Image 1: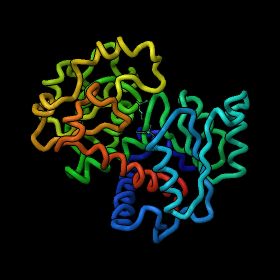
Image 2 (image 1 turned 60 degrees about the vertical axis):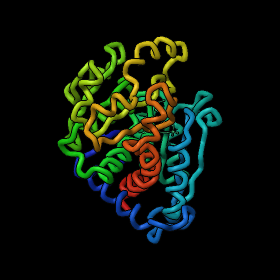
Image 3 (image 1 turned 45 degrees about the vertical axis):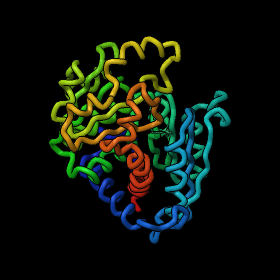
Image 4 (image 1 turned 180 degrees about the vertical axis):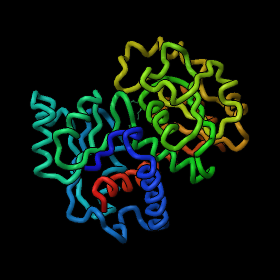
Length: 301
Ligand code: CP
Ligand code: NVA
């Protein structure tokens, strides 16, 4: 069964096929109203469960709209409202949901929850973010990069900030799509050891971004991080803010990305977010197209 759990556990040729299919589906919809059905309706008569144990704007709306455009129906479920939040096991939840729906997307805390869901579900499961990874986001980011700047293979991508879940999926993508990834951030916020070998480290942000084709950052405090860490992280990360001075060290045509939601003028200045390098809203839009292609791939339709 085609679960979409992570980028490093999905075959590179399959990932490339998903990106190509996303681009084709996006082109086919150009200029059409958002609510219009796609010409082909691969999810017709299909029901999709979207489970959220954490807040979401983009993932929630883009999956919901994507399913509907492909002719399917959705139900959006909050973890706390389900018995899942009141002691029912993940395995039993997976078995039960598999009797009602054709596809499950889950945003959760522990990766173990996602993996247990996938192990016991008899329908495909998609990772909509865990504490460890965010693969759908990075599929949209690869698509966005290639739309603006051509093939990502061999290009220099620089991540400035916290070595978090979004970085981890970038590291997986660096291996699968064959680009160079540089991490710049303070040692206490280094990426997890399992990612070693997938990226290099340059502690000086100004040096790191030299020759960069893409500069990326993300929030300094993720949803799973304790709020008590906020002040310490701001102190640790202040020097890694993506501002106009930093972007000026990258290639003149470098792109700037942020998965959003952003804390403007913390991890990146509004000048950069709204400036000529920024493709942040294209990234957000491409969540829709990339995820539609991921769902088709999961269902092989
Ligand atoms: N980037 C992203 O996943 O956004 P949401 O948290 O709003 O879904
Ligand atoms: N790193 C962020 C990404 C949000 C889309 C978080 O996990 O909160």
